[in-house]
Amino acid sequence: MKDIRNLINITDLSVEEIDALIKVADDIVANPKDYEDICNHKKLATLFFEPSTRTRLSFEAAMLELGGSVLGFSSANSSSAAKGESVSDTIQTVGCYVDIIAMRHPKEGAPIVGAKRTTVPIINAGDGGHFHPTQTLTDLLTIKRKKGSLNNMTIGLCGDLKFGRTVHSLIEAMLRYEGIKFILISPHELQVPDYVKEKMNERGAEWKEVETLEEAMADLDVLYMTRVQKERFFNEEDYIRLKDSYVLDLEKLQVAKENLCIMHPLPRVNEISVEVDDDPRACYFFQALCGKHIRMALILFLLGIRK
Amino acid sequence: MNIDGVRNGIVLDHIKAGKSMMIYELLGLDKIDNCVAVIKNVSSVKYGKKDIIKIDEFIDLDYDILGYIDSNITVNRVKDGKLEKKLHMELPKNLKNVIKCINPRCITSIEQEIEHEYRLVDKENKIYRCIYCDAEHRVK
Image 1 (tube, rainbow over the protein chains, first blue to last red):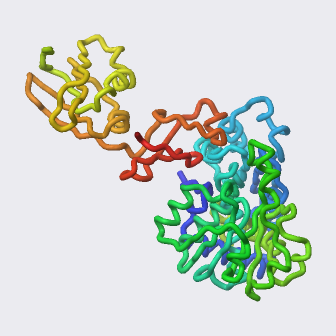
Image 2: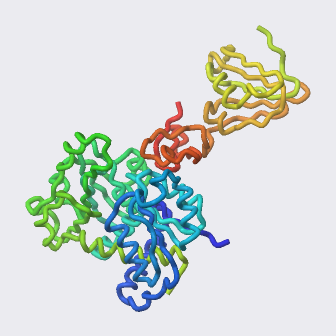
Image 3: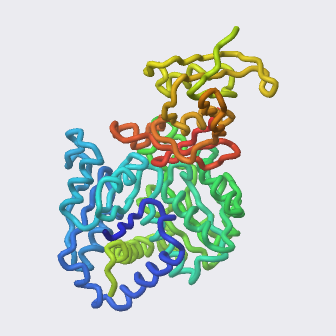
């Protein structure tokens, strides 16, 4: 039987495999005709037990651009989960109908349960506050395209670093590259979890925590902003108190490097002022475009399809 | 107090004082028919006090549970009154259904039938993490 590859955590992919995905993503842009029918008769299921705009639509756009088809649901309410069906049973069933599954679920580890119950590749499209590896691939492609390399840079991560799954996955991925320094910018209540700090220490990474954007801004090559997510809080009072902690505007950017790359996994609420959108350093909508290209490359990789 | 030695069976020695009843229950020793002796607070040169369990029968033991509860335990297999084999326990790399994940955000909180699995991530500090959500568990 063919070995099935899943993408649950970014570390499921080696650095060499990530490099290969980035090359394919670039080739897709350079030679789109070569890929337009490459997934003919292949089906992708997008199983979103939690709402999403970019991730779900970029997966669907990716598969459609590869000539494949898409089916699925966009909320738990429109699936049998609303009747109490388990994740295991849902995945085992859908695995009978499609060639590959992208799933998002509010509970951490749900894709691991899914992967144990099906023989088609599972892509973790976000599991609660835990991991979001395809966002990380998107981020890596964006950084590579904007900076020309994934080595030797200072990355500032700002906002909700406790529940922000994109942050955890990005740190884990960047730890495998040379000369990366992290500056973690967050209020005390939203600092990165201990297990992420353990990983940074294990790899001997240089990192520090600060509480204001101003303390870090001048040193940064990449600034990764995140939203304080209401759905990750059990207590609304905590959310209201912390949601406006960090807002990026042109004034704060005055001391930033000219080639700073400002990223955000989106959606934003007000953590990046709209006036920043026209600044040449704003990369977050370019990042959304990169998301489609890298997901196309990932689908091909997991299905074992080559040009 | 005198308790006869085991002629053919197993002696669990160097159990941390007070943990023998927990082991008795987790190993299901209440369900076997042969003689089992739980001896608490035995004087020990090394530990001050220790517990001992003597089982007058060869049974399959879950070494993972023993290693997790107390990695200092030794398992002595006795045959015809003589020590046949002595095993030293250590923290197991993986544990299934021994630690229950209590993270309300973990898939195990809603998916009732799946096993609770933990992996050892730091042997020195005795730290396990849930394989699903990475919730930490420190062995006391």
